[in-house]
Length: 378
Image (cartoon, rainbow, N blue to C red; front, side):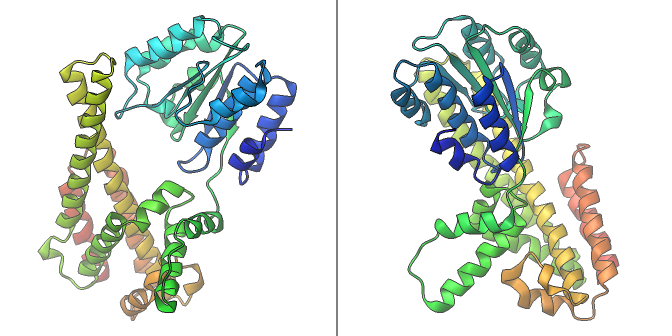
C-alpha cells in the first residue's frame, strides 16, 4: 500500500495513482516520464514516489521517507534538478545526473534522480542522457517531469514509462483556492470572493498555479487589461491602442522575473555553482523572455474566453460562462451582439496567438488583431 503522501499527491489523479501503486508493488522501472499540465500534481507525486523507492531500500524506512519528503530534501540519494533559468544548464545535467548516476548509493540501496521541467533540457543534454536512460545501474531510478511533451525528444520519451496526469477539474481547483483564502470577510465581500474564485478555477484550464496567479493583484490587473482591449474593439475605440497596456504589463513581468533570476543565479555562483557572468546574464534573460511570453499567452487565452462568454450570454447560455464574477459587464456588452460574430472573434484571437509562435512582432500582431475585432464586432 503506498504511503499517505503518495495517496494525497495523487488524490485527483486516479490513473497515475494506480500506475504508481502497481510500480511499487511489482518493483519500479528504471525511468518514468510524469507528463501533464502545470499544477496537476506531478511534482508532489514525484517526490512522494521517490520517497517510497528510497524507503523500500533503506535500513530505516521511516527516516528515509521523512527526509526524502522534505523540500528541499537532505537525503543524499535523492537528486532533484530544476532549471534556474529558462533552460537546464548543460553542465548541470551532465554533472548532477549523468555522471552522478554512476556512483553507488550513499545509504540504502537506491538512488533517485528527478529532472523537473525536462522539456527545458537542450537537445545536447537530452542526447547525452540517452545512455543513462537505456542502461542505468540497477540501483538508479530516473523521473522526468514535463508539462510540454513537444519539448522532449522522442528518443528520450520512448525510453521512459509514461505516467499521465490530467488537468485538475475546476471543482477541485475551486476547493483548493477556497482553502487558501480563509479570510474574515463581510457577507458581500465573501460572496464576491467566492465568485472570483469560481471564475479563476475555470479560466485556469486545470492549472492550479495559473488559478492562483489570476487571484493575485497582477492577475486581476491582467484580466482588466484584456477586458479593456475587447471593450475598445466592441466600441470602435481601437485607435487608442489599448493593447499597449498589455505589452507594458508583460514587459514589466519579464523584467521582474529576469532580475529575480539573476539574483538567484548570483547566489548559486557564490555558493560554488560555477557559472560565468555571461551564463548568468543569458540565463536570466531567458527567464525574462519566458515570463513575458507566458503573460502574453495568458492574455490571449483570457481574451478568447471573454469573447466566448459574450457569445454564451448573447445566446442565453449564462450557465457555461467562465468569467462568473463579471456577469453584469458581460450582459451589458452582449446586448444586441451577434453570438456568431463573438465566436468568430474568439477564433481570431486564437489564430493571432498561434502567429506569435512564428516570431511575429507582438505589437503588430496585437494591433492587427484588435482592428480585425473592431471591424467584426463594432
